[in-house]
Amino acid sequence: MKTAIVYYSMSGNTEYVAKKIAQGMQDSSEVDIIRIEPVKAFPDQGSKKFIWGGKSAVMGEKPKLKPYEFDVEKYDRVIIGTPVWASTFAPPIRSFIHENPAIKEKKIAAFICFSGGGADKAIDKMKKYIAVENLEAELILVDPKDKTKDEDEAKIAQFCSSLK
Image 1 (cartoon, helix red, strand yellow):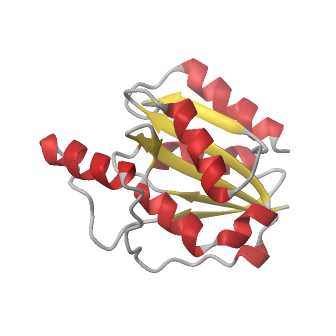
Image 2 (cartoon, one colour):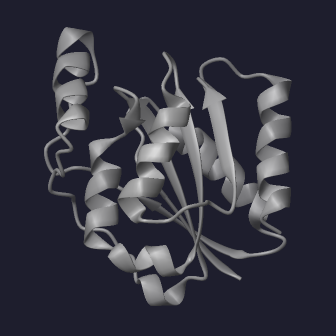
């Protein structure tokens, strides 16, 4: 099964998990990792990080993305990775979904990394935005790169196993 792991990561937590999932799925699936980045980067420090990022998330903004290679027809499954911003998924992921509406015809899984809360709401909002009722698998982790825990490694392994 051909799988795309599409993710946006500001602080590195989501990228960390994307790479772990790719490693965990290599035995059962051909995996491509696709990093999504906005043309204009969001501030990543101080109050501007929360003000600008939070406003963009709440307002449902879709920032212009840097070029990326993704052909939905090549994949059987799309795994989406995002941090939580203001109890929703990050705006660059919103842009990706908007640009690729045919992903709803594929098997879709998602993983969410967060520090403050709102992960369940973020997954629900993502499902509504994609227009799917259920995801093939869901994974929620708190600061997995910055606060590494054996428990998180087990959750990642279980997520990968559920997709095999």
